[in-house]
Image: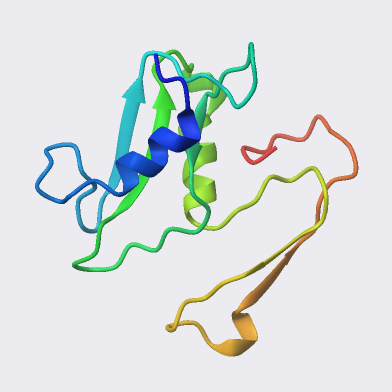
Length: 127
């Protein structure tokens, strides 16, 4: 059982490359835990990752910490990979995220996301 999911993700993302379970260059690493406690009492995380993780040659790859009891039908891994490639949640407060990648032209540096005002029955892995 992991008691601090976000903190544990930070430790895993910064492991020395010689560790067997460290991120590998140009790869997505998925660490699986039996259970991940959420940020407050009596909560749990199905998964956690960082937003916008570029995969560069020769650099550590992206990483996801996933709870081992998530169901495939829940599309949790797809949701977390969505965050890795830069997708935000679709409902909630307006989000403006500035991408800081030297390879991107300046005119594409800012992404504005249209947020849903309320939940809907529309199928969306980033809900």
